[in-house]
Image 1 (cartoon, one colour):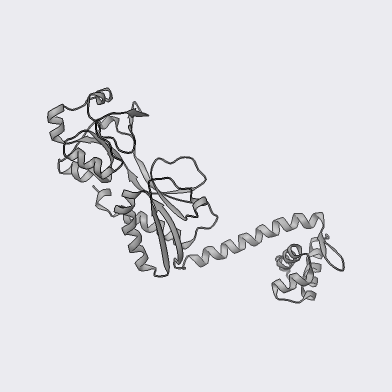
Image 2 (image 1 turned 30 degrees about the vertical axis):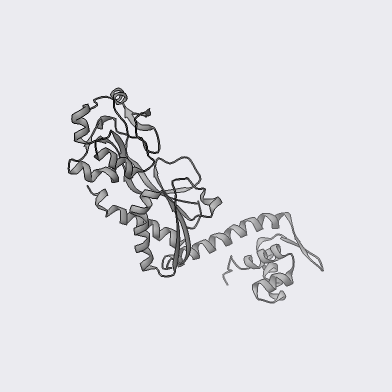
Length: 298
């Protein structure tokens, strides 16, 4: 008769973790004699002693300690495999906590999440819109939507959409003050400053930050855009702010050769061996939803 090589492993782990045959039997819902028989057969197959037995408790031999470590990993892997298959058909449910930058979250992410929840009524979502970078693990967050270039971290990153920065101005501003033809000429222009007074550019394939100055500053992309459309100065903004206005001629793209390479919109989540259905399915939904937006198909 063929021997089941897995037989006795669960019983052995239960005894090793509980320290007693009786407690292990209660955990597994079997008799103590069943536990004893399974471990005896296991030791016989392995041709080694795994446990020191006494009237009150058991202790692991050196071989038993080594074997326990591997058995626990096998149990974890088995449970992981079962959850992975089960979650393929599981619906998102429970609480999902996430964060995103304010303007992008209001315009793009929150509407998509709302539509996603219509398909999964058992899901609850808590969205924290903030321009501060929150610590996902410390804050107990399941997901973060980040823009631009990512800093090194232990978080898992999934690319949701491209993100390209444009340096531009209105035709009225350029008619009055002229068009810059080099990075050095930016110093002669009124630059509309948003959340940073440094603009990301490139020259000869090398990225660099260029400090700019002007008489207007606001930490709102929409406010920067409005000022640029009114001819107040030059601006550097992401594609989703300016593409529509570039297309209809309300803004003109400048220094195209010096624009930085595409960055991206990212979904970040804590590193886990098994990603929950609510996070996995929402990330997939956001990626598909952003791809269908007109802003990303221009």
